[in-house]
Length: 140
Image 1: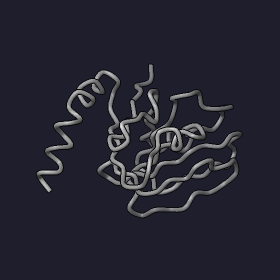
Image 2: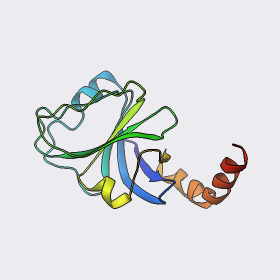
Image 3: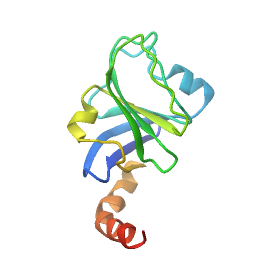
Image 4: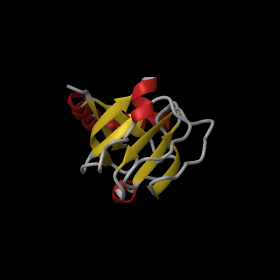
């Protein structure tokens, strides 16, 4: 069974995905979403490492979220169609791919901080989000 992750936007207090698989080997990143007909709601893939992606050979559009090493959003692409190449972002550490409108429906913006963790760890992050935000502001 493949381990899945939840992706939560801490700034907007919204989820981008609840069943996100990690692609962190050369083979899993190369395969990505190829061979799939679509993504189900709340599904996604997390490509680590990655500076850019392509949708050559894919049959559907995706939303693309570029993250730095601290899981902060540095670039967004909504509805990247099939047979496209996304821009390269050198400061990008990983990329999330979701169904179209995931960015819009979660209100995700550049600069937002994402929490990516196993579903059983998400409860902890949700319960402590207020104290983490307060600590972050006072520690700056």
